[in-house]
Image 1: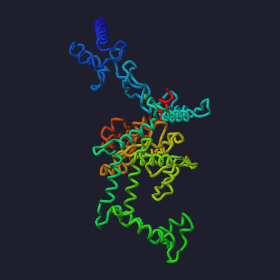
Image 2: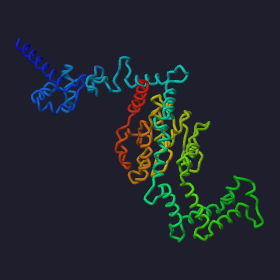
Image 3: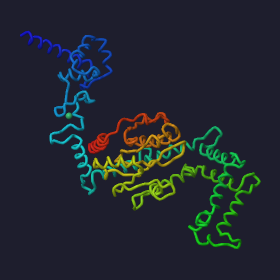
Length: 471
Ligand SMILES: [Zn+2]
């Protein structure tokens, strides 16, 4: 009888506290307003303490939101998953309460672990063929590409806005009345003609001499660099002339000579041509772009064209060019990789069954020191980008700040263009980058890493599929 009476009293006290909480701490639509807590603590100290007494079954670091949720929804014990026994966490939404089990190994009704079911569901969803004959994944990709090409309120596409910010920086008039681009061109021309090397020659001259010397060297095949270049171009250049030298050798000898003659202005032809070139390139044209920018755009457009072999000129260069970097084809998948880190990533994606959903060679523009460059993203899944890095290629283990700034600038461009960007470090770690990670472009982003697991990778894929299909 006594116990029953006590229970009734507690019940009444609880109801009173609930009413008070609803009145003082919840908004009209019954959601919790955190900012009202301090006022409540001062006005009703006993009731505030009671919130903690009634929820003492929770861990000490449980939030006030969780405690109030428990009181309002009559939760009196720690919530655990019935299948795996793991503790459930409070969902971020006050009214929705505790989350479904997030343990990926939790065995579900069909006897399979949660991650297997998640994977199967996501794969089924993205491979579904829709009315237009394309899969859901293909349609989502198509839509995303169209959005990026869509013209915004200001009449520009995302790509154009990106380009304009850079040209704006370059067109900015500086203290001496010239644009930033003009000053940069002048400075670089100046450096070329005024920097005196150890041997007393200018930098421009040195570079010129070095180039011509290299070309004059006779290789194993008995041909000079000039001859080799010429051979490729036409037979005429190979013709041996009266002095026993090839046409190419004579021609280049003459050119080098002419190039080094100083004129009235004290500049060699070579130096003058550099000066003229930089002046022309830094002039701003009718389209508001300098020659530099126009060339850059043209080059990147050509570079980003993907051929019948599925490669763009950047990748093709990596495979066949001078600095061959061992680009290899992964399992006939059409995906290329470079080095063991990228292979390891593809292995994991393959094991998860998402290999045919990812692509290589996504290109983004980024800005570094006022110049526009192309960033070749390693792998892409819809608007999720993956960059495979080692702490060596990031910043030479903290020794190369320029390299770090360059990497950070690339990633900044991706994040600010609305992509979800993950960096996978040395197979073992992962970083998910946000806009505020770039407040300081020299920040060591390697510090944002957390352990990387295959399950985490699966979560990235399945969460994306879920998010996209909710649309
Ligand atoms: Zn569970």
